[in-house]
Length: 287
Ligand SMILES: C[S@@+](CC[C@H](N)C(=O)[O-])C[C@H]1O[C@@H](n2cnc3c(N)ncnc32)[C@H](O)[C@@H]1O
Image 1 (tube, protein in one colour):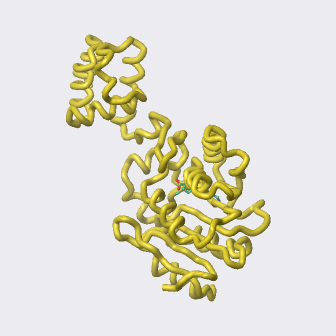
Image 2 (cartoon, rainbow, N blue to C red):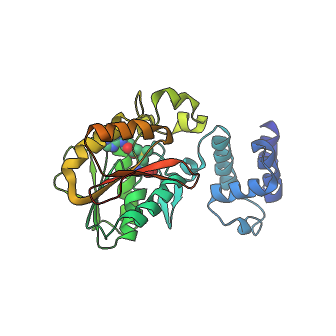
Image 3 (cartoon, rainbow, N blue to C red):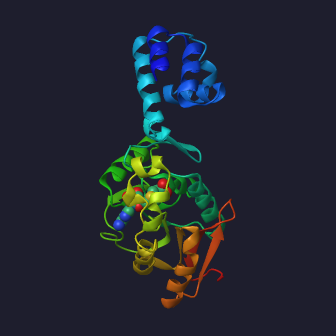
């Protein structure tokens, strides 16, 4: 830290700054360049084009490197996240979309038989899934909800930036509260980590991401059970419900679905070969 501060204070030279960041974050030069490029929102190849930094650029870079060192996810520092083809704004306090969820959207596209006209997303966060679905299904009208006002504010920003306001509507609320009507597709990546496992999550998640987005209660499936049970009133006859789940919840969910007399459901694996996705729908195969 002292070395870095010294270098930052004494030098505006990019090569020295890269060396200092590499030392401070304990990463190699390549990674240090990638981090600096991301933190400065510049392509990496441009870093050395202007080999010195202005004083205020240096101060901002310094404080961002320190935030990163303290465990803050880089997405909260840059306020950007890439989700499929879209660069989205992400505000601290809103769940950061994960790569598994990009895979979830791909899987939905493969499984949904026809083009859905009306889509409902519960727990939209920064709006990533709904925005991806809006791009996949240009005819669809999407309603996305979240209990968190900050998430809705974040999603509104992204929907506006991508000019999707006429097709993606946002609503703050608890589960299906205030939802009227039926949908062809109900989708959710809900809070699903069992409470006892919350302590094992990486520090950057525990300390910086919103726990209400992650904590699935004592068994990890309480939220999903409500999501499914209440969702049946909002699913069209040939509709499909798609839910991202915890790989360890398959047994509990199978038991729950059977107890609800739901005959038509199946689980699918993610790219790491783990059961991650649950699909429920009258017209689909059972497993
Ligand atoms: C795991 S995050 C998923 C966010 C986003 N869909 C994604 O995939 O990146 C779960 C989201 O559900 C929201 N949520 C939690 N409890 C809720 C509830 N009772 N009703 C609606 N949304 C809820 C959280 O605020 C959070 O944004």
